[in-house]
Amino acid sequence: ACSRGAFNSAMQKYYARIFPKHELTRLPGDHPIYNIHYKVHKRGLMGISNGVRLLAVHSPAEVSLAWQMNAYATKTDVFRLGANIYFYVTDKGSLRNRGVSPWPTAKKFTPVTTLKVAPVKYAGNYNPEPLAWKRFAILMGNKHRIAVDISEPTAITDLDASKHPVAAITGTAAFSFDAEDCRALRKYIDAGGTLIIDTAGGSKAFSASVEKAIAKILPEGRYGSIASGHALYTRSGFTIKKVSYRKAAGGSATASRNPRLRGVLHKGRLSIIFSRDDLTAGLVGYPCWGLAGYEPDSAFELMRNILLYAHTGRLSGETSQ
Image 1 (spheres, one colour):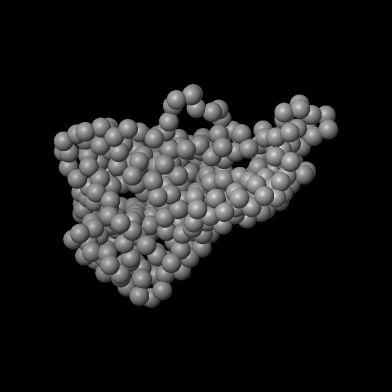
Image 2 (image 1 turned 30 degrees about the vertical axis):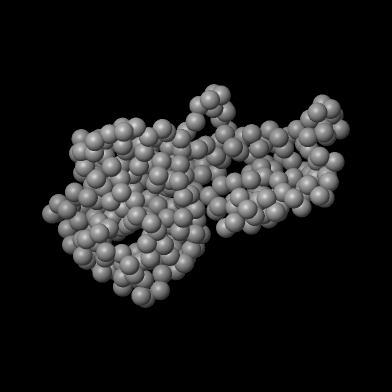
């Protein structure tokens, strides 16, 4: 209020406490908040991002007074900015009903089986959404009485297929695995481990890095699309025929409604399962504009089937295309 410097300074200190791993920076001029619906000319917002979405939006200059005074004629940009922020956080949809949360309440259950997964730690933004796997585990228990044992983020060189039959990699930006990382991942796969990779938020730079890494890890592997009739989509009686994509995934994906998972066939099994479309943000369950990937329900169903398949899908004669 009143663009007071003392409040700005206090909030910057508070942001550092809330988000110690992320920095408050000025939003670029082409950020969706400035053009998602209305074109906003007066800019200057700051924000904190985890690489997938904005965690906080901060305006050093006052905006609330114009709303309070209904000064649309002279402060049109401020009203349009508010509308754009609304569209951004709802993925051009609507706010949830009051009292409704995307976060599930865990129910007690007796597990019919337990699936183990190890998030992988590497030199990059390896854990942009720390609650993704936790929410997924709650839903697996509530819906299917399946326990999901999630380890702490594990370094590539510490992966052990006997302890971690499935390892999961995600990220938001370009990266590169060195020779030691590639050797360790190859050793893990040869020992029977399965690698699940997804592009958080749909980052094209991350996806390009993944495909370069795959070529180094399993140069002789057969890489391609996983056919819609593959056992992964029907494993353990959970059949996936159609999926729903977020708006940013593009018209072709939304129109087809077919899953677009890819994989590497190596020694008779899918050793790497890769989604260039976001699963991570979908597992957390929130709406947000600009995420190129699956809607939350579809993200859950796909990851459920991927994990079940990875734990049991060592069939001979599989095909990834």
